Image (cartoon, rainbow, N blue to C red; front, side, top):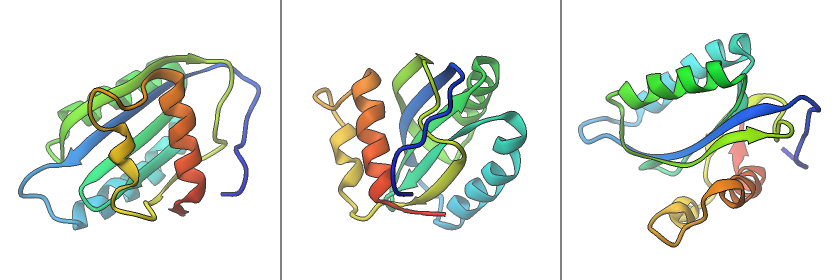
Length: 138
């Protein structure tokens, strides 16, 4: 991914952390990625989905209605459990110019977002972007 990319228009961002639900296997991750790659560009949604083997970290950016609608869909998705929003709000510009997905370099990479002492708000977004830059993204 190289450096952080920015586009000039204001956007709405949601960053969340979730767990792969009990009883789900890794094949659902491929299904989530496939559907996201097909739908997100048409909705003008950019961002990154990271998976560490048990947790998802996902930054969604775009028009507020589109991002909120997608988040509602994710919250109803039985493949996700324990969804925790780390940030939801407007941003002056996009952090990423496309939607990408990949795997964390280490199974502990998303640990920094767990618990009461993990980053939230813009700090969480910046930390997530730095993590995504080091991840194996497609």
